[in-house]
Image 1 (cartoon, helix red, strand yellow):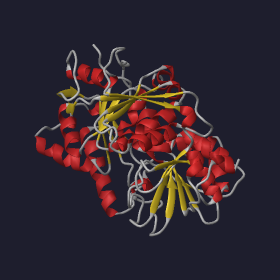
Image 2 (image 1 turned 90 degrees about the vertical axis):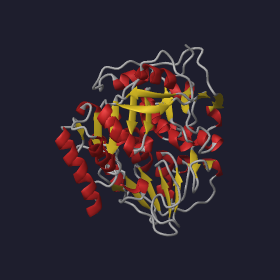
Image 3 (image 1 turned 135 degrees about the vertical axis):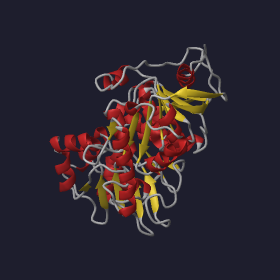
Length: 420
């Protein structure tokens, strides 16, 4: 049938034998996601459609995570609208503060994102779930409204790029570095409206946490989605959690790809993206002297358990530089609790870091760590556009958690090797 993973998933969900890039199809969706910023508008549009009930209350997830705990009156009103709609519609997967997490860390943990599914969310980083072999992509709030009513969405079938990374990873290199390296090579529009299939020994050796981080930033290359074919690592992660039955999907052996790119893992150091685009990457050996005012470890990209463990391994017995603020934000309540049980929170507090409740917070310039004019911040987040984390005259640099933790200690962007 010569179809890629994305094409095969779309064909199955559209009830077709096959699809080809560029075709427009209507396909059923397995999960519809919204948050406290995007869902309120979708709810308003849903009211206009003329249906009383969502298509399936067990196929919708609503997660207040961006401005929660509510930072001001406006964000409180947004969350109230979300809460009331969830009650009215008896939404199964509504996650209130205290039970929530950052949506793209929470839903895989909860077993709501599964191989072979189509998942849409009114958030661009919905592409995260490609890490477990789903076709996951961000949509607008109006598309979310239609999907809540109908249980389907329209798609233009994307062409697919196959990206192979061979060999073994260098020390301190993670999925975050692989995707930053790729974006640095192809640019922020290098995969525009394409599916990015990641494969190779370096990718198959990644943990699920690291795969989630990698697929999370497919959108930063302009991609429609990023996908890693399900393997034993994937199935060991999703099977005990799965809230639904699922069927993994794999590319046909004779699948047709628009482009095929091969990288060698030996060439990839820890990466740092300089302002003001994720494509403006440099290897850690080429960063030079960049003094910092703030470091943030967290977000839907790097707030998972593996990320906190890596950061703690570097920070243990050390102190944050006197000129630096270090803010650490776990991705979910379960990660928060696990970090406490493992003693990581004590390590962070002893190092003079701030340890926060789960929230998107500073990633989008919301709260919990806004930069002032002239300040420089290093973050494990996914975007470093002008004004992304505060004042338009601030600067945001992106890295993995190991580099971020080491940099918090030295006061400048540094390799973990400098503080070990």
